Image 1: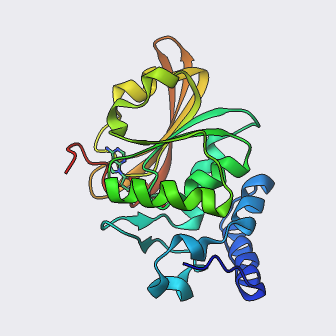
Image 2: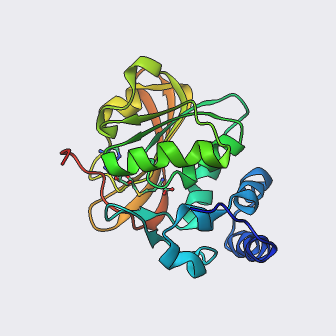
Image 3: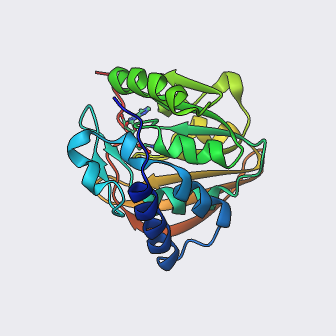
Length: 215
Ligand code: SAH
């Protein structure tokens, strides 16, 4: 695979940034990250022409690379500061992972599909991006050994909110998770105390499901 990023790609990317800005994304660091990341390299060659449309697309193992607007929307809700410890559930192509890295987060990311886990583990270092750790495992249980986290982002549709994820947040920490079966409601939990959470909802989104078994 060649890792070519041309002026044409860069131009298309700036248009994509303008598109998601017009849809309401204001965080400059998030917009900068979308403007920098060569999204076409995260996709199969048959979809190269689509890379800079604001749409989700298929990747390996029947999964999808999330829509850039959705990636930006979820990332904005996390309110990441440099040095924050962030857990991502659903590494997939690694595109969202890299957005988090560019915001200065220490990123831990869990993927349940072995094929994707392997592919993305090889690919990100080639592009020069270094998440703290990619993990092959089940996002429903989170990552207790690295907890607590400043924020946790779930990039697959969760039928319910996994309790361990709430428990692995710092006080003041934020969990952004799309909750629902066919259609999900983007939901933000802010941990206010050991057992106290504030909950906010941000409308409907569609994700591939957060799966419970591992096959
Ligand atoms: N963040 C990704 C989005 C990938 S789609 C990107 O930017 O490309 C959601 C991903 O969640 C898929 O790769 C899927 O395999 C993964 N997933 C589904 N259930 C999971 C689980 N229980 N634990 C970890 N990952 C899971």
